[in-house]
Amino acid sequence: MTEDIRKRMFHEMQQKTAFDDARSAAYAYADAALERNVFPTPQALDNLAHFDEPLPDEPGDARQILQQLDRYGSPATVAQIGGRYFGLVNGGVIPATLAVRWLTDFWDQNTPLYLSSPVASSLEEITEGWLRGLFGLPDSTVAGFVSGSSLSIFCGLAAARQRNFERLGWDINRKGFIDAPRLRVVASQQAHGTVSKAIALLGFGIDNVEWVPADDQGRIETAAVPDLDGSTILVLQAGNVNSGAFDDFETLGRRAREARAWVHVDGAFGLWTAAAAELRHLTRGIELADSWSFDGHKTLNTPYDSGVIMCRDRDALVKALHAAGAYITYSENRDGMLHTPEMSRRSRIFELWAALKYLGKSGIDDLVYGLHLRARQFASELQLKGFEILNDVVFNQVLVACDSDTETVETIKLIQQSGECWVGGTSWQQHSVIRVSVCSWATTEADVTRAVRAFVAAREQVRKN
Ligand SMILES: *Cc1c(COP(=O)(O)O)cnc(C)c1O
Image 1: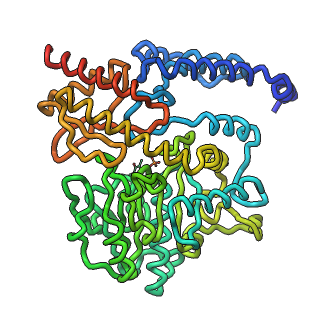
Image 2: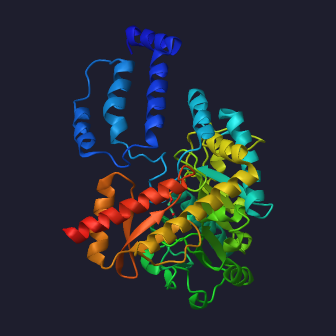
Image 3: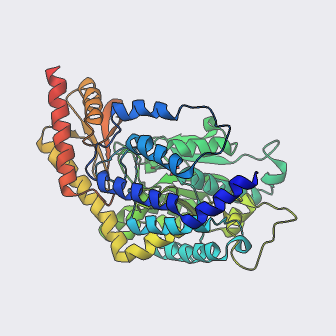
């Protein structure tokens, strides 16, 4: 590296003009985010061509780089921090957590070990205890902080694989699957795609799963779950990604404990209902499970990315994810990498800790229950306008149909193009449907009414065409 660019970087750290620019641009973005078009305009998408350039030969200018990114990048974002994005299951962002992110970006902590970041290690441990209390999980439960549920589901099933094989006298880490005794995996046909991915990554094979049918709401058919035993991993769901429905954790949890089967709960967005008094009944019996995966970036509205694995069997989780190296110094304190597949990791704990501390128990309850109220408002306003609601709105998901599949599909397209709000489509009981997910604290009653107007206008246009 030339002396010249090194000098420039010291200068930039001292002058902070690029940081000031970033702050101004971010504030302008935040001011526009509540009112602007949700999906980028065609013009904004065309302007992405401005990034199509060869890798520069020479160093650039920090402020110019930022300016280019703001000018052509900001308009090509999807306005997810506003209140009218209802696609996927995407949370907004709590301002306090953004502020914490800005500060801790300067810290640039790497979090594998206590020795690499005492503050991250301490806050991971504190947050682990808070979450255990919030969800009413067993005292022995530990947490690992990862990028999202894709990875936390993987961790839960890895711990399950470890424990169940160990009971059968098999060290899966050393011996692998060749000549291994057989483990069983039982899951709902409505399990999330990332459950199948974890099953595939862990070598079980998707075709070897005992797939159980789901009922008309998307809950696993409790009576159709086969006999369980100590070699079984049962995957349940707190929050079906389409309907928001919850499995019967109490009945199946009891059966699993008796049989010594491992239960993993995929609670990506739905587990948070355990922290809301009016919705807590949905998660009755979750404490009977062995591992739980969920996100901070969905229901809790932390910035991306933030996922958590919680596991009552620390030994199984650590054995499944442990790594060694002569230079890795484990300590008496918490070493985060023992609970995660990654070694180096960004310090996402600060934002999760801040979200919990900022909201407190009553704020979390308000946030979670508020999403439910807005979803119910959505459903009832749409129904009044002649749309069909296909699911019981038990939490934050609403499945909507027009008069025919074609009308539904065309209506989705026009809603998306309108920029007024954004919803996606899905398939539900062999029909095309509109899928609404209310997941942002920033969604107001007025936002819902405005979105419903966009639904009506889009359907009218389709009927005219
Ligand atoms: C979103 C989601 C996932 C995947 O979570 P990511 O955080 O996107 O990796 C898994 N299961 C369910 C039920 C989900 O809603």
